[in-house]
Image (cartoon, rainbow, N blue to C red; front, side, top):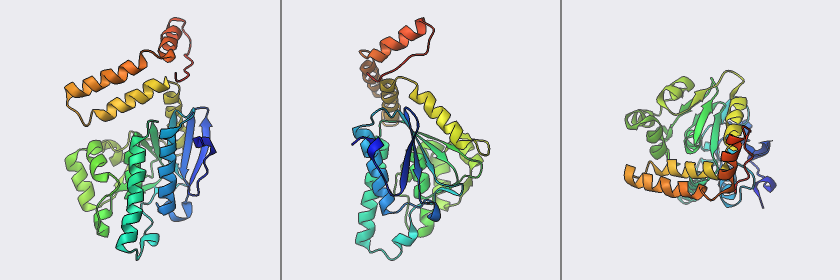
Length: 267
């Protein structure tokens, strides 16, 4: 089954364009809180995009409504959970995180409201993020007797730096969209009402580029955080060489010389 044939209880999917998938966290009545079912749904979505993305070349991930992107873990569901049940649920969330980080398709977060705790961690797991003016952010786990467990202690320092990440995580205090922009947690704060349009515009720009090139570039950029310059460059050359024998490379050069827009086919 391709991603187009998938149906989820807590995540709504729609095609925003031929090659752009809009995924919406769809539990507005509880501020799109992350429950067990959403863990299954997001894990399966990212896994399917890894297995068979079809003609999807970029994903925009947002939340339903204008109050919250995702308020974090569903604490009503978690209230009174046994240690065993908590660990089992968290193992699912770990699978969800790993599947998101492994997804070869670029993912843009369109943060429409509060992104707290696991909600912010989902944002940080995307390739980059745009935010609405009313968006708010926090990693509140230490105020609840736990710590970030969806790669927050890993992805936040990579986005905002070690010292800023320590302040955010150790205090649990919320911060604004403008602060998120200044600190590097988001790429852009969009004008009121313009968030989704701007995120989709960027997604269409990405989707219009050669898909093999985009995937290989994403893979190489991600590797840069885990390697020294020499090994990172060697990795880049391997990723580069994957694009050389493609039809898309020939089409890109041909279209440039013919002064037209290229038509990429992902092969």
